[in-house]
Length: 132
Ligand SMILES: [Zn+2]
Ligand SMILES: [Zn+2]
Figure (tube, rainbow, N blue to C red):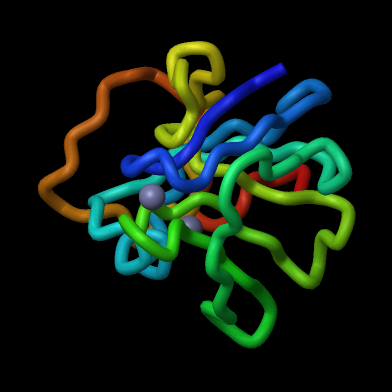
């Protein structure tokens, strides 16, 4: 069981089931939504994610996806795509122990910032990962 939540502690979640699609996304929308140069994500089945304190605010970040965040402190929490109705992406850095779910690759590196230098040796995909 993975546990996490926002910075202020108002929203808490539990994620059960094995996480998959652990990645660091370099797309411009993740960047803007987080205010960070890149965003770590992992994916779980939607029925595996349960909010145990508070409730995130949601908005349509594009015509095909919704993001959620803490309505008080703004921590980005989830991403849900209409194309993957069984899945929900959760921000790795909102976990209590982000070390438990390290990324396996980098995605959307076509829009990686030029001043970001990475030497972690992980696979890189210019758009989405090949298998998704
Ligand atoms: Zn909060
Ligand atoms: Zn992204």
